[in-house]
Image (cartoon, rainbow, N blue to C red):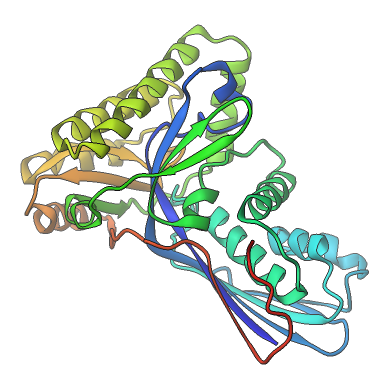
Length: 342
């Protein structure tokens, strides 16, 4: 049996980091606004007779093989996410798992979460497990926390599972996703996405901010309250297609986010935002936790080419900004189980 799957990465527009439990419980009305983009993490899985497991990461140039799930060397895997997910799904047959990603390393676009969802989808199909999307999300989130050893947020999994433009209401009883009925064409022509070439570690940045919040840092808590308010306003601005307000809110979100932790911005990011202003950049912010990675730019209509040229001259790598209308996709061949997400 052969299974292929892919899931899109995301760009967060407002309310990031607040989605890490239990931060949102301290801020009534907390929400996150993000968009799935056509930049995919993929998995190719083939089952075979016997019990041998082979993991291949095309991005990292890693290939590992183990006799079975009981192989003691499995705990030493250099691909811990793949390892932990295989141990959770416990396939009864051997398999070869090959992963790849279009998301640059440390981009701040939720690439590891997209890969996580793609792996979960492929493994669920190959083992005949039937899960709802909500259940698959919980598996992915909890396994990732085991791997990175710090709390994880939830916002990255929703674009990977559902695609589109999303608002996530972070409530006491549940996290609820509202797909926002916005013009995809407007999104595609108004945003530029650029990789700075400087990877970042979201676990470190987010953990430092989270510790400061829990320790009662009044400045950080006040910043988060403002970020929550901005996210609510961003949602309304997108629903009314008020792009002037979207620009103001994106810039305001970035200013407040930079106050949380000194390493969130970098000299290169500041230079990119400043030097593209004359080309048509209306506002910009780093994706994810900051400290490098990708920056998303909201630009005036017709200005994308000029902004992209300047960013390329400054050493940036342009990533095509195109909204992914669909989330997780799974295809299976050669018979076998045909389990689908409930």
